[in-house]
Amino acid sequence: MSAFDFRNFNDRREHSANAKAALLAKFKARPAADDPEVQARAQARAEVARARDERAREREAARLEAERKAAEEKRLREETELAAQIAREAAELAAAQERKSAELEAKKALRDARYAARKAKAKTKR
Image (cartoon, rainbow, N blue to C red; front, side, top):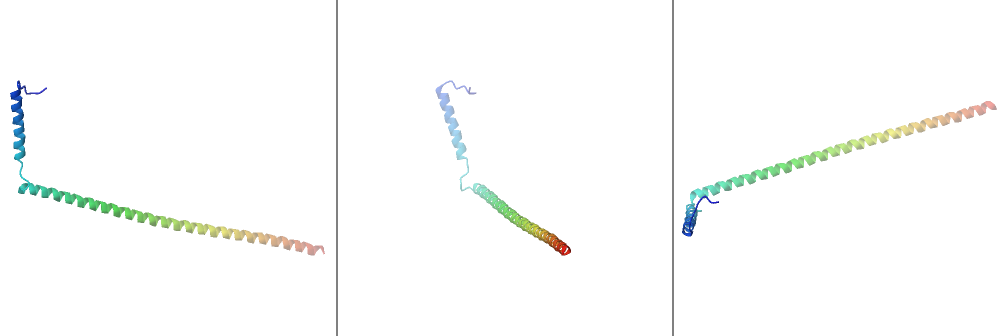
């Protein structure tokens, strides 16, 4: 409930008129737009906004540069890993080929030894 107790219509109407007059006086007391103090405050706000925008652009540029560097480092790391993997696979392939050729030579040596033994055995029978 209201703290004011207006008993009749005239009192309420007078109170409303006084409140409207106070609001109008408060509005008229504001300095005009061409007042130097108002212009100085507007210019200060504009400077703050420009500085804020510049800092945001700098942060964005720094973020983009960091992302570019990270992507470049990742690409270099992937390239070195790929080169190392290719080298490992080439070494494994060479080792496998060498093992296979050694096995073939060993098999050939065993086959030649069996052949020589068979020939020697045939010579001794005659």
